[in-house]
Image (tube, rainbow, N blue to C red; front, top):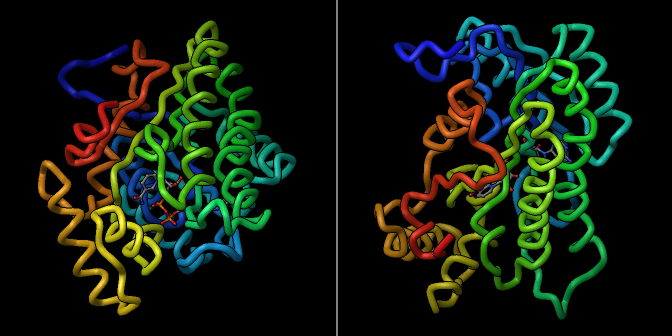
Length: 292
Ligand code: NAI
């Protein structure tokens, strides 16, 4: 039962984290381990789309997350797969069941982002983000939720975005995928409640990860603030930093992934057992601009 003197402890729990090689997934893996959970880290650890403007994660990064989980004293297993592949996720779920005896927490977090005006869109500009972000998140739920049912309860946390709460110029595929994840989360919360499984969505603000630290994203921030990008990456990074910080109530251009991870630990905890069907934002105040 809950021990109020030691809040948000996850001792004895098993967590699956998708997108664990770096960024938010890595920070959450480490925080979950520090709270006492064993972690199974899933990642494609390679290119997920030819239509993104950032470098893919690799096997060394996934292993580095594992080293950090091990340094926290918890058990770690890495599984490399593409979350568009439901049979691969089901095989991973079988491996978690046999290797860890079951599952308590699913953090379905992996995703990609790209920008393309609707009038210039080719099929992969739409499908890569919808398939990885929305279908891939659903695949993770379909593969791992049965283990939570077997356990008699558990936690599912999915990663949406502030762009799942408003529109995004040149970002329709990403925004649609992240709005879709909120619809998925709310529906799953309704279906899984009878199994004592909570389902919630994390809403990260702009987080300092490879997904956001590249010219395309700087250009987007500059254009949103009414300016014009120059294609000089250093200059555009500085301009993006200034406009993003000006828009942020806490004056923060990019939030560290480690500042997002505690929300995942809370939502994964026994203390959050009455928290389900909601969105939980870590945006340095940007939620105040959105109204959600
Ligand atoms: P990241 O690029 O650092 O990490 C994403 C991880 O997901 C990578 O390790 C990547 O290899 C993995 N991945 C991508 N496609 C995959 C696939 N098909 N199968 C398995 N693994 C796959 O990005 P970041 O920023 O950590 O993003 C994590 C999640 O947070 C994503 O869903 C993203 O959309 C979301 N997000 C990020 C924000 C940000 O500002 N960085 C803001 C709001 C949401």
